[in-house]
Image (cartoon, rainbow over all chains, first blue to last red; front, top):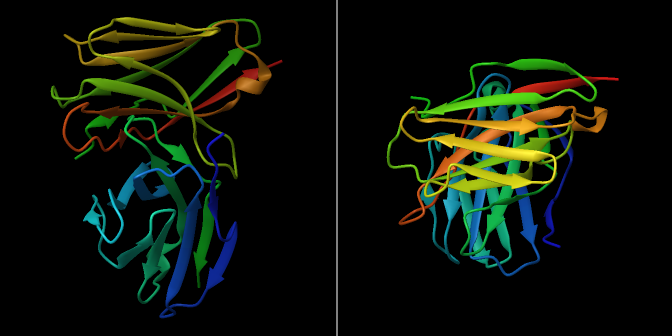
Length: 111
Length: 113
């Protein structure tokens, strides 16, 4: 079974802090994705990566950056957290197929 | 601009009856469609998919129907069970090129025992 893990289930940070969200997949998938889920807005793509050290902007990249130094790990970075970044963050991975496999999510609260 | 739309935020169905969840899309380039199910505090899990070369795909109690001319797909669950209570997301993609998923806003299904 594909396993996608995220470093924290719940996180509380203060405005202005730098926040790191880590995602690891164990199936040697080439593709990795970061989404945020907000009520009434569904899942929105922040960034994705098709290969190590490669990254592409999704629909809402502002205020975020990513890092992919190893194939199995994809990190989402909030350079200076703001209250409007309070959300559920979901990481996903996929191989050559279109189906994406999701981690359990990190609920981030920025106060 | 929301390219995939789920216009019903919620749906309640009696146990044993059919649940029908609807999804519309605007981009005619989409040629692959998926349904995901999400329980609270968990990530979405893949449920069923359909390619645009088909108009129906079935997997046990779950059937997805695709109407390309109407740019509409639906997920039928029959019979519905209380464990089906979750949020269901419709997603669309292109099979060639960058195959990112475009998600709808979700429909919360409640199956009443």
